[in-house]
Length: 214
Ligand SMILES: [Fe+2]
Ligand SMILES: [Fe+2]
Image (cartoon, rainbow, N blue to C red; front, side, top):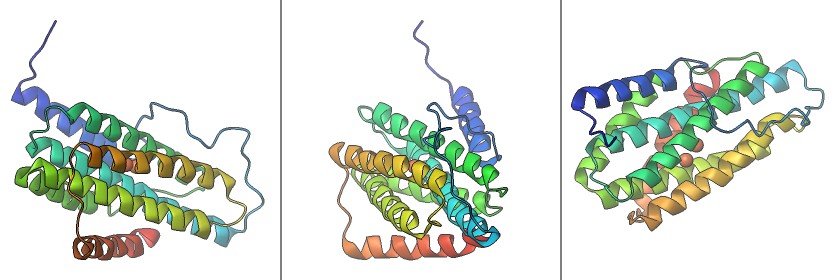
């Protein structure tokens, strides 16, 4: 049966996604975590584990932002032909969310209490970009994915040497994000000029500094 979703259906679906994104352990991955049973960490000190948790908390919040961005964009953008591609990317972000959350639990830590704030900000930015036009909103997705990719590369270096399980998660995420950026550009996304990217990296610095601890 071909079913047209009503406004009410869409609202419920949106609300469900918000809850799954923001409530710890509520995200369900469609792929198993890359931190498989055969990957074991070397011995880590308490400080090293705390540091790893700080970095993974930042990565988790990055995924909250990505999820909010895709959702905000989905609310306002037209995107008929690229919607399914973007939905595929958004689904992979849910995997990333769940994997980071799982890893934080393994490190006896938690996701950030600031997630609702960053969710709201990213949702707003995504919705505004979507309302301006598909080219801009897809460009925004591409620039964000590139930014996240840079973070992941940095974090793979900064993680404690013995933290092989976090590194396995980040490695797969980096592969996925590069693919998401490529899809968004291929779908017609504008390449953002350097000053816009600079502004975005300043914003991500604020997020990184606050979420590492809180
Ligand atoms: Fe992601
Ligand atoms: Fe992504």
